[in-house]
Length: 236
Image (tube, one colour):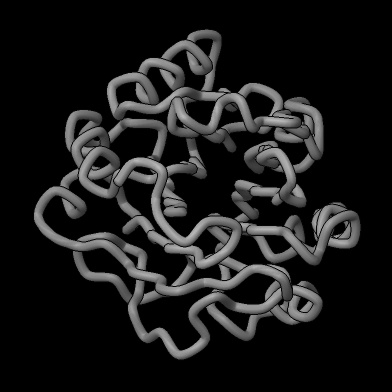
């Protein structure tokens, strides 16, 4: 099972390159951050997923730009898919124009298997806003910590207050990694990561690079291969 977490910056940099990066990674589950916003945002997110050979199951509206797509073979196993708004869009006017935040979540469970929850998160770049939203993420983790895969743009380097608050019960899926993710061309920070529950086995975590990655967005995507719940990719 392959899971890709990718901040695509609203497809404002190079949409075609984003599609090619996703297609080359061939994920079973795609966790998007900064999916297109606005009235046509969900339509553009669904089209992005189709162009990459996937199906959007959470298109980013309620998730405030956090979206999830899966490979067609996984559609019968989607037990739940939803976006969760943390705060109203009016928050940007009340609090000095911060971006309203939310997250996306999907539960996947094949017959005879315990479901696994995948969450796409994009935490605030503002420390005060991250701290205000932290209890929401802690409740998400508490609801299903054992089989949770949380991926996204944490807007903190490892060891920051959000990492410390969520780990444990989660753990960094690549604790020894020195690969940076942002900015894409000359990365200096490891803001994008996977945090996983104790029942999730991460076989490998890679930060993707190369000319297409550098063209596509201001973040490098992170690809995780799981030994659980499946030993091989459904798209292999």
